[in-house]
Amino acid sequence: MVAFAIVTSGIGQAAATGSLSGVRERTRRAIVDTAVALWSRDWNASLGEVATGAQVSRSTLHRYFPDRQSLVLAARDHALLVLGEAAGAAVQGCASAAEELAALLRAIVDVGDAVIYLYADPARFGGSGADDQDDSAELREVVVRAAEEGAIDASAGPDWVIAALYSIGYAAAEAINHGTLPRSRAGDVAVRTFLRGVGRDDG
Amino acid sequence: MVAFAIVTSGIGQAAATGSLSGVRERTRRAIVDTAVALWSRDWNASLGEVATGAQVSRSTLHRYFPDRQSLVLAARDHALLVLGEAAGAAVQGCASAAEELAALLRAIVDVGDAVIYLYADPARFGGSGADDQDDSAELREVVVRAAEEGAIDASAGPDWVIAALYSIGYAAAEAINHGTLPRSRAGDVAVRTFLRGVGRDDG
DNA sequence: CCATCATGAGACTTAGTTGTTGCAAAATAG
DNA sequence: CTATTTTGCAACAACTAAGTCTCATGATGG
Image (cartoon, rainbow over all chains, first blue to last red; front, side, top):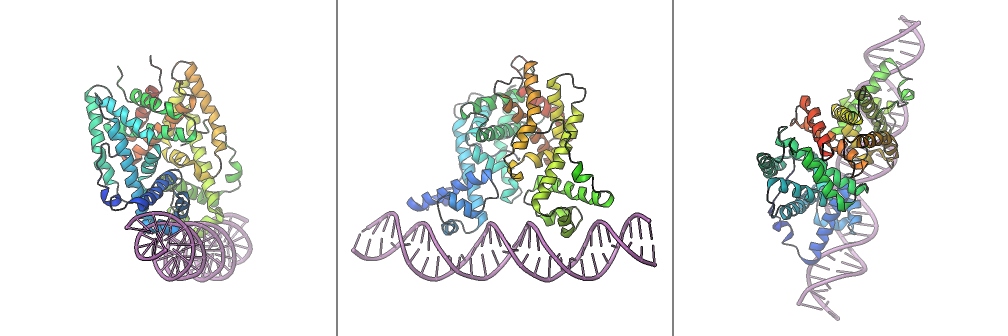
């Protein structure tokens, strides 16, 4: 589990989706959506299984994504976009950094599949994970601000707060998948556990 | 991430290791140890890589474990044993259920590789994960007891407390691996985050 | 020293995934 | 309806990993 990423995003993904339209756009989305949903639960699923899940032939899949890695990265971009949009919408109108963190955690829980796909194993995307570190800078800022506000205890370092945020959100998303936590309560439960867990002693 | 397992264990693993001795026992251990350590970081590592890591030829590996699955399960048993021993030793002399939970969390952090291997993806072990559910009954008992003692808030259900326990321990273990959290502090940080996170409001 | 055990090396088969190609059928737009 | 786009199907080669087998070498114990 690596650091979080892309809090408020404006990913320039138009080049990848803008040039397509109508049928092709829908087909592409179906494949990418299936890839995220399937690979978040079983990373070893083959391209054939992804194609089947997207109700598309393997040939068609290869027309859109020449090799496996291109689909892996497209799915990553899409997951980042979904997460970024959810996070961006969530932090709107937050009065404090602590509220922002809570809203971000709710967003993480809401788009669980994307989060699981993104962070179950960063090594999937080949690189050193440098992007993640860059993108998480914003999140670290929010954490530092929340600490300055006195809302949380960052004595263990902001990285631990971020790890806890991600970890608890991830656990809640999985609990939803496993049916041990109703989706309607997951957000509240996760936020409570997180805010108290990293809160200050006098909280 | 599925429920936790094997808190205090007496796994009957003698049949698997007892009949071997000397050289064979050492070779077997080297293979299993390497498998846990390697697969906890890269589940897609091939048997050849495991063999190389254990400084053994692939032929030898296949002599001990005819097929991949047998090694996967042997590694799982060993990881459970390691975790169970650490947990069993940790809970000795605990005065309360809350202390037991804290001790268990420290044990989880200590044997991080085993925990990561066991719980990164339960689907690795094929089955429905029924064993986990059986084994986690003891842990659930401790959680319920801690709730009765008033030490924690189990209003979200014991499963969530267990998920949080595991999740935070897992995050701490990974933070150690990533170097963002010194091993010497990881236990304290994890315990604090957990106990406050699931604690009662008046805690 | 000798018999046995454990290992390493290599060749081999099998199976599954990936990536490519050609062609026909279906859907779509005009 | 017709032309174009999009798709499905099937066959193919390339590659990797898994699993099996044989033979030679090295270590171990009596």
